[in-house]
Length: 274
Image (cartoon, rainbow, N blue to C red; front, side):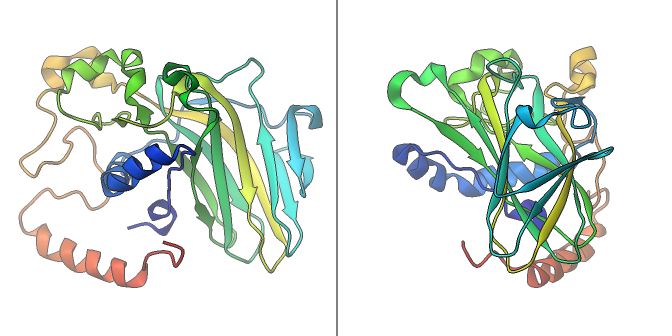
């Protein structure tokens, strides 16, 4: 299991929702890993980082330098810094995209943690929610360039935005598409993106190279030919219309896969804060 993926979390400030979210945390994480296994770095930019001006973002305790490849963020040792971006209009509408993705580069020799936070409104829930967030944790290894996918589990109340749900009765994760559950994001009303660099005992420097909508919510094969798309699993219960590292194609691979999984779990224990 990849360390950068296993630390994804989803936070909502409604206590009742938090209680329900904890009960299904393992389901969320399973869907997160399976849906990220064959993600593609494509999509459309949300922000033009090479043309952005200081009036277009709010930086706290960060030095922001504009360079030809994006925004260079620097935070001093012992300081927590953040930068927030906002839509030109009131909201970003990401209903037809699986991820809001970031391309980041670590410009230091230290492992850097970053916390992307998506703010959104959820009009469908009325006055029950004042402000809600979709929060994540990621890590950049020294000198690493990474595309990080913020998985947005969609709120069941927004089901009318996803008529394809009718073709997948009883499923919460649509294959090669979005995750739809009882509590989550209203992707039509994304109001801000904040990137937090938590306090560290070293100077941090991260280059934000791209902020973009990634992977369309409907697979092309599903849109073009449902007859070909269904059934969409193979005899091992895997999504059959994509390939990824570790996908089982023959019975003989199980022994090796189990051994590799055991080694990976031993090498990458869970975060201490969990």
